[in-house]
Image 1: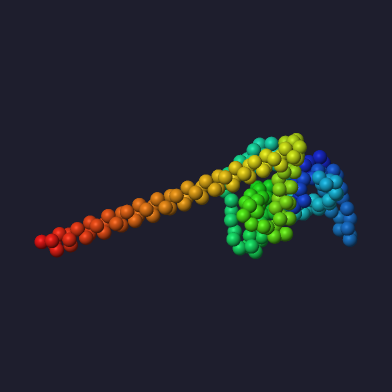
Image 2: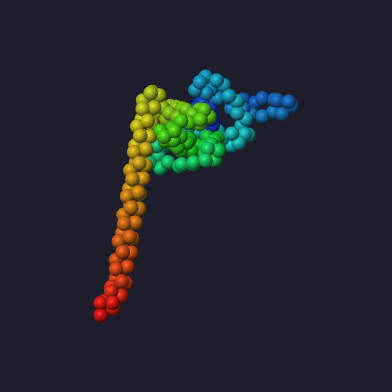
Length: 203
């Protein structure tokens, strides 16, 4: 993937940056091209042109994609992983892909988990990072203040948690109904089977 000066790009786990220059450098006798990125925190990062795919550098999302992100944030689908090591590995892998959609899944999962238990220091830091990446990219693309987007993200997450809770309640109620129906059917079948025996004893 090639970029031009002025392109807004996302550097995985670092956030949004702008391509300021494209230059050639010679390092230890090897000459290669570099993208010079100015990140949101004003730091400068150099990414080798030949290693763009390796580091996951990508263009920022479009306006249309922001609405899709808000829909995903509030869809009520949250992956739960009970094992800490497995959960941390899965979330770390997602954070490294550079995909904003993967980061959204991490944000939903850890935000939901934080409502029921205290996160470890590493997971709390990952949650803060995921939220920063989501909010900062949407804010930049939509041209809105960070505080406004942060509030919209929080509202979407609350919808997500409410939807998940309702789905769980419906699932539990449905299982209870099926169990009651099965018990009633079993009792009826038992009664039908016992009727001939009672009739035989009566005669």
